[in-house]
Length: 98
Image (tube, rainbow, N blue to C red; front, side, top):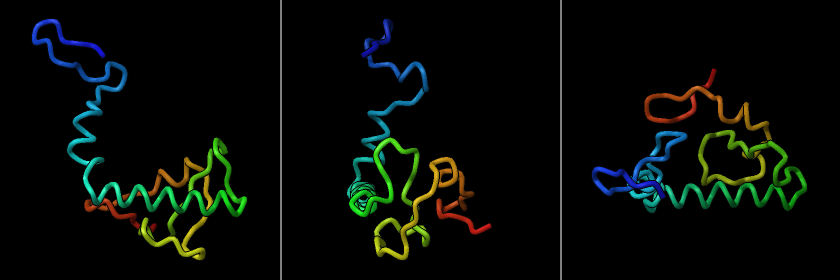
C-alpha cells in the first residue's frame, strides 16, 4: 500500500492509475454486479466440466445473446479472449451486432 506523503491517504495504483477499492465499492460489490459475475463464473465452470475450455487456455466463454444469466448450452460459445473482449458496445453497455 502506497500512502500520499502530504495527505496520508492511500494512493491509486501507480501502474494503472485505477482505484480498485473505489471501483469495488461503487460497482463490483453491488448485488447486481455480483449476480452477473456469479453467472459468468457458472458458465465457465460448465464449459470446463464439458472439457471445452481449460484454465489458462486464453479462451473466454461467450454468451451469444449477451445475457450473462442465460447459461443454456446453445447460448454459450468458447472464443479467444481477444475476440470476446473486443465487441463494440452501445452507450448502455450492450453488445452491438456488427
